[in-house]
Length: 422
Image (cartoon, rainbow, N blue to C red; front, side):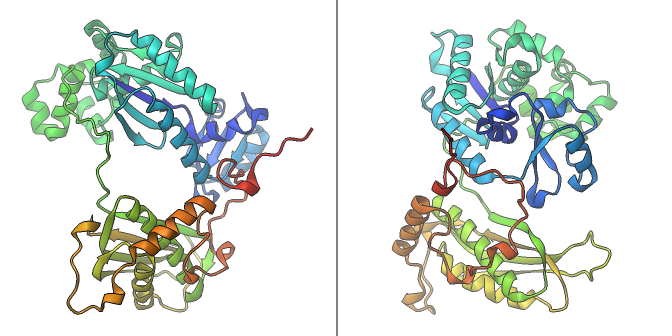
């Protein structure tokens, strides 16, 4: 059996944990630069006239009229709260696969001797008691069925956010209940194709001939078909595979015409991705840098460009990566434009112990792993970019994302700890 644990309205729930005055009230979370709504709690979702992914400036008056509290994205808080949830889940199973920031699979096949429904309730209640976050728990024989069980746990009130699909009769009933679009892994294009041949429910899908599924939906569809029939096909990965590429692309809080501030933003983003690179003990062979103006603007001249640089030696050294990214940026930057975004991406990732030297590079240019380790330790202990490259500069507030409504980082910044008056 496999358990799927999913936090309910995760971003909004994280905000409400530290704002008990908002319990039971509509809350939404905004995208980068406070652009649009990307998350909402159940109270906000019940307000049908507040569309998801709509530009905030178009509906801000609606939010205010309906007394909806809105927050800028606080990814530091969400990431730390996610880690707390995952740490709790590890006390319930030795094998936990973190699927996303708010979802995880647990391998519970060795726990057949216990009451699975009570086990699910214990997971739910412990997470809520320790973190204040509500979760749903679905338990079933395969990953796809566990996702479906989780959906039923949250959508059908009588299940109280815990559902165990432990018999074939329950599996059949679940397939009869679920629309084809509810099935994990079946996207919009396949939904339209399946509906065109009369497949509207999950039960209709599993009745299709395997040969047709394999031909029309490839091996991916075949695995889904088998998983829904109770045959486990998707590998359980307690240890995630290393990323094949690591990058970030963020819009500036304001349009930047000068190269200096764009360089500082680029250096900051390189610092972020380099930390992730070192965390998975990899080195990058290539670095891609791109710049963009705002293509939604009707008054600005438009320009974008990108460039790829091959590192002399694959590395995860922040300073070496910044140096190459800076050279790349000088090649593609053109004066006379107001830039909205810079993007960096590291590819050609290889394990750090597989890196070969370069006959034509001096020894001093090879990454200093001890220095990078020291930087990572200090920044983890004292906060992000406590120690960093001088290229980042001191003008972060001039180009960083707009986050006027961001809540404090209650769990990671001493100066932002919650204060309680007596």
